[in-house]
Image 1 (spheres, rainbow, N blue to C red):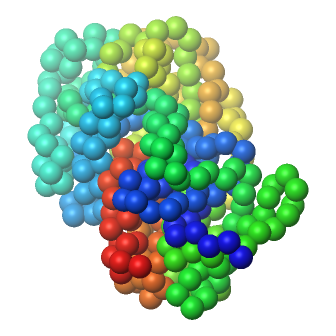
Image 2: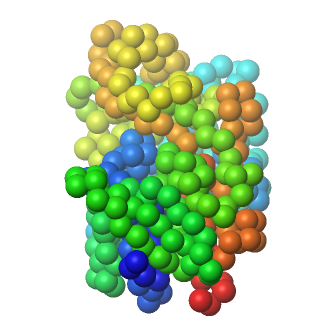
Length: 373
C-alpha cells in the first residue's frame, strides 16, 4: 500500500486551496478527484461573487472565515493576476416594509466586523444605477466578482510547483482508521482498478459527496456525520450587456439570498439563484421557473423585457439545515470532535465557501498539523 503524508479528497476550490496551503507548508500532498476535471461541482455552479461577509451571524465560522478570506482572496487575485472586479453591490428594499430589514442587515455587518454599509435613499441609489427601482438601499463596496476557474487553476499551479500531485478520475471508495493512519481504497473511473493509499493526514473536501465519504470510513462514529440536504439554485441569463455596473440583491429569503442580479467580468447579467429543495443531483433548469424570476427581478428592475430570460445553469448547495430550519454554519470537523488524529471533514461548505477558501485552507492546515506528525 502506497503511503502519502497528506491526502485531500475533492479538487473543488476549497480542496485545491487546502492542497496549496499544505504544499506551501512543505508537506507531501496528493489530491484525489472523482471527476475528470477540477472544480466541476459546486465550485463551477455559483454566482462567482466575492462576498463581504455581512449576512452571517457574528462569531460564526461563515462570518469569520468570509471576512478573513475576502482580504486574502483580493490580495491573491492582485498578486497572481486572477481576473476579478471589486464592483460593489446594492441590497435593495422593494417597499417601505423591507427597509427595517436593511437596518438589521447593516447592524449585523458591523457586528460581524464586515465594515459599515452605506445607507442610500431611493434617489441616491438611482444616481448610481438609473435602471434600479427601490425605496432604499445599502451599498456594500467590498463585494466583487471573480473568475473562479482561473482561481482554481492558479491554486493548483501553486500546489504543483511545490510537488503536490493531482489524480483525476479517482474516487475514494472507503477507508478505515489503522494504527495512527487512515487507509483508503480508491477506484480508477476508467479501468475500475482499485488501489490502496495510507496517510497520516486526510482532508475530506468532497463537497456534495462528503457525507457519503465520511460514512465509508470505518472507525469514524456515524453520529459525527450530519444529514445532507440538497438546495438547488437555478440561474437565468439575459442577452446583451446589463444596464447595471454593480450587483443588485433583494433582501434575503429563507434558504438563500433571493434572486439577485450578478455580473460576469464582461458585464453580462445573470439572475439567481432561487431555492428549489430536491432529493436528486439533477442540474437541468426548468424553463418554466422563469415566470417567478420575472416577478422577483422586476421588483428592482422594472425594465426587464418580456421573454428575455433564458435558462443558464444550476448549482446545488450542500445544506446541513433542512427546509424551514435556520441556516447552519460551516463544519470543519477535526480530532477535537471525533477523536481521530489526522482527519478533517468539511461539511456544509456552501456560500461563502468561494470567498472563504484561502481562510478555510489555513484553518484546516492549522488543525490538521497541530499534532506535528
